[in-house]
Length: 100
Image (tube, rainbow, N blue to C red; front, side, top):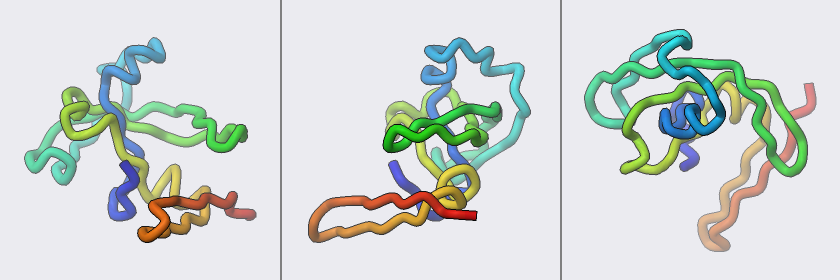
């Protein structure tokens, strides 16, 4: 899910486990907006691949959000890397790399 109001990237903890990340050893933070109640998640440096290009960023891993989707991309770590264009009528999203 793309949540333009989200502060950071947060994915289901199971994705972190698939990537062999020991979830509970990350930097602990708390979020409330995704599930409606305050919950702890754990932040790690990760590399994302978008359009064949790799970008180093931070991602949080939150247990049990798969029922709501597998994660969100947020302002820090995604929208600050890309210029994002949504086209609702065409049901498309266009990403362009933000040049420093």
